[in-house]
Image (cartoon, rainbow, N blue to C red; front, side):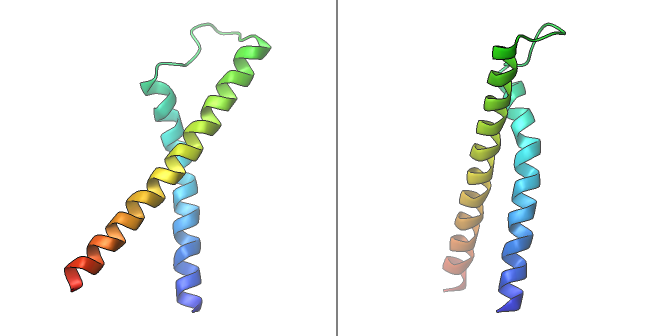
Length: 78
Protein backbone atom coordinates (compact mmCIF):
# COMPACT_ATOMS: atom_id res chain seq x y z
CA UNK A 1 0.00 0.00 0.00
CA UNK A 2 2.83 2.38 0.84
CA UNK A 3 4.50 1.73 -2.52
CA UNK A 4 1.31 2.62 -4.39
CA UNK A 5 0.95 5.83 -2.39
CA UNK A 6 4.56 6.83 -3.04
CA UNK A 7 4.22 6.08 -6.77
CA UNK A 8 1.08 8.21 -7.03
CA UNK A 9 2.72 11.01 -5.08
CA UNK A 10 5.72 10.86 -7.40
CA UNK A 11 3.48 11.06 -10.47
CA UNK A 12 1.50 13.94 -8.95
CA UNK A 13 4.63 15.98 -8.27
CA UNK A 14 6.14 15.12 -11.66
CA UNK A 15 2.90 16.04 -13.44
CA UNK A 16 2.72 19.33 -11.56
CA UNK A 17 6.28 20.29 -12.49
CA UNK A 18 5.80 19.25 -16.12
CA UNK A 19 2.56 21.20 -16.33
CA UNK A 20 4.37 24.36 -15.21
CA UNK A 21 6.89 23.93 -18.02
CA UNK A 22 4.29 22.98 -20.61
CA UNK A 23 2.22 26.06 -19.74
CA UNK A 24 5.04 28.25 -21.07
CA UNK A 25 5.00 26.28 -24.31
CA UNK A 26 1.20 26.66 -24.40
CA UNK A 27 1.54 30.46 -24.26
CA UNK A 28 4.34 30.45 -26.82
CA UNK A 29 2.43 28.27 -29.31
CA UNK A 30 -0.60 30.53 -29.07
CA UNK A 31 1.75 33.50 -29.46
CA UNK A 32 0.05 35.32 -26.59
CA UNK A 33 3.16 36.70 -24.94
CA UNK A 34 3.51 40.42 -24.44
CA UNK A 35 5.15 42.44 -27.18
CA UNK A 36 5.95 45.47 -25.04
CA UNK A 37 8.14 45.77 -21.99
CA UNK A 38 5.47 47.15 -19.69
CA UNK A 39 2.04 45.61 -19.35
CA UNK A 40 -1.18 47.20 -18.22
CA UNK A 41 -2.88 45.71 -15.18
CA UNK A 42 -5.52 43.97 -17.32
CA UNK A 43 -2.84 42.42 -19.52
CA UNK A 44 -0.98 41.13 -16.47
CA UNK A 45 -4.10 39.48 -15.10
CA UNK A 46 -4.90 38.01 -18.51
CA UNK A 47 -1.37 36.59 -18.82
CA UNK A 48 -1.59 34.96 -15.39
CA UNK A 49 -5.00 33.51 -16.21
CA UNK A 50 -3.70 32.05 -19.46
CA UNK A 51 -0.73 30.58 -17.65
CA UNK A 52 -3.00 28.94 -15.07
CA UNK A 53 -5.26 27.58 -17.80
CA UNK A 54 -2.17 26.16 -19.51
CA UNK A 55 -1.08 24.53 -16.25
CA UNK A 56 -4.46 22.91 -15.65
CA UNK A 57 -4.79 21.69 -19.25
CA UNK A 58 -1.27 20.27 -19.18
CA UNK A 59 -1.85 18.55 -15.83
CA UNK A 60 -5.05 16.92 -17.08
CA UNK A 61 -3.40 15.90 -20.37
CA UNK A 62 -0.50 14.26 -18.53
CA UNK A 63 -2.89 12.22 -16.40
CA UNK A 64 -4.98 11.22 -19.44
CA UNK A 65 -1.84 9.99 -21.21
CA UNK A 66 -0.83 8.13 -18.05
CA UNK A 67 -4.23 6.41 -17.85
CA UNK A 68 -4.02 5.42 -21.52
CA UNK A 69 -0.53 3.95 -21.03
CA UNK A 70 -1.69 1.96 -18.00
CA UNK A 71 -4.69 0.65 -19.96
CA UNK A 72 -2.50 -0.38 -22.88
CA UNK A 73 -0.09 -2.17 -20.55
CA UNK A 74 -2.96 -4.13 -19.04
CA UNK A 75 -4.30 -5.03 -22.49
CA UNK A 76 -0.89 -6.31 -23.56
CA UNK A 77 -0.61 -8.47 -20.41
CA UNK A 78 -3.84 -10.31 -21.24
